[in-house]
Amino acid sequence: MTREKKRKIVIRLLPEIYDVLEKSAAWSDKKVATLIAEILHEQCEIARMAGESEGCKRYALNRAGVEMIPSNRNKSKSSTSQMSIRLSEEDVLTLNAVTKNNPEGLRIVNGNITYTYRKIIPGMLLNSELFENLFQRKG
Image 1 (cartoon, one colour):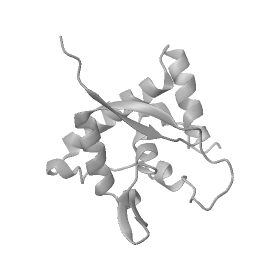
Image 2 (cartoon, rainbow, N blue to C red):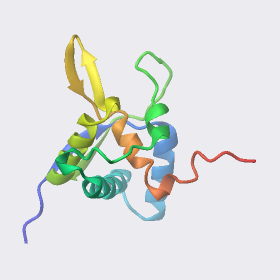
Image 3 (cartoon, one colour):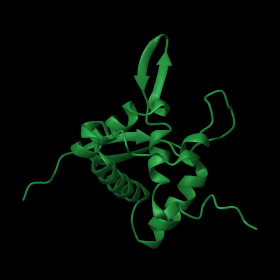
C-alpha cells in the first residue's frame, strides 16, 4: 500500500481560532495540525463540488474569518506562532484555486502580484461546524 504524498504549508492563526481547534483536538486525541488538515480537506472537497471547473469560483469563504485578520501594520500580538500542516496535492491545488479566485488572496508587493493564504485559510476553517457558535452574539 503506497501512501499519498503530502505537501507541507506553513500557517499562522488568530488565537481565537487556535483555541477552539486546540480544545477540539485535545477532545478527539489529535494534534492541532492534523485537525486543521482534516477541516481543510473537507472544505476543499466542498469547494471542488461547488466547482465551476477548477476555479472553485462558487466556494464562499466565511466573511468573519476574512475580516477579522488584522493588517500587517497592527503591531499587537495578533497570531499564533507558525505551524506546519500537510495536505494532499489535490487539496493544495484546490486551496490555490480558491486563493487565486478571491480578492482576499491577492497581495501586491513591490509592484508584483503574489498570493497568500493569510485570509483564505481562516475563511475556510470558519466554514466548519466546529466554529458555528464562535461569533454568535449573546442576548
